[in-house]
Length: 376
Image: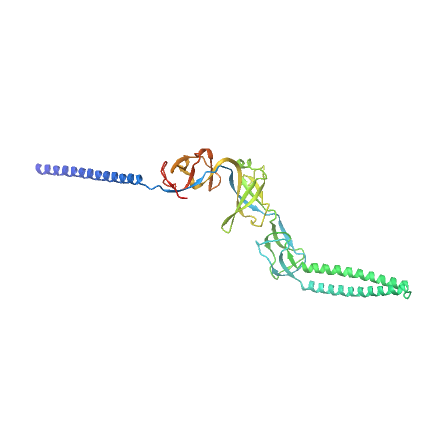
């Protein structure tokens, strides 16, 4: 029994040491594998071809730092367009949201009575004009007969009085006809200003009364953009500064030049910010009232800086740097960057070595001092 127990103990120790030996073999194999990989990596690095990069020249310049604010377009005063005459709507020439010039037709009304009245007034005017023409002929004939002593003075004066009375009738009827013609022409309701149609009220077939509001328009001749800004920027912005107004049109950004008209000196109670207002001197009906746009406002002038694309600026923990191209090598250069917008930064020119170029593409995986080749 004791011998069997000893054999069992020996077998356990044998298995234990066998396991230790197997583990040691595995560790050695892994170590050799690792060393082999590192050796091949060093060999590959030693024979690595210089990666291609794209570079840009250093051009110190003077630029402005711009701050972006969200603004809202405000139109001019809303104008009520009224019908000068009554009638029934037979045509709507424009719809809500359309932009029109002053004098453009908005609605066409119809009133057959006005047409008939105008024709009647024209006929009466033409009849009286014909009578006046006949009286003027008789007056001229009487004048010749009076000179020969055939017609007395009373007859001549009588013709003169009749001609003057008839001329007065012509003037009165012409005024009546012109008024009726004006009323008839006003059956076409036209825009009283250049702007954007907010609403066309009556529909086709509906009766419209004189002085009734038939349309509403927003004056676009004096549009402006307003934006809320905090006190930090309110102190740096002054009237007359140029601004870029960026609007999204058909999926593309369009930049419109504007001018700051002023910044409020009181905080807006609703937003808790100061209000910046900018106008657009050369407005071409690009923007709609209520549209949200971006305002790029210059707030700080930077002198002797180099503009670099955001893609050229890298980060290493808390440090920003870029790679300079020096003697066919990439040199790491720590820099301080002032961001001009979401795509461009400004680096002080004195932070960059004289005569170098900045690597803007191909710097992924580069290390300081690595040999590179320019592929511009």
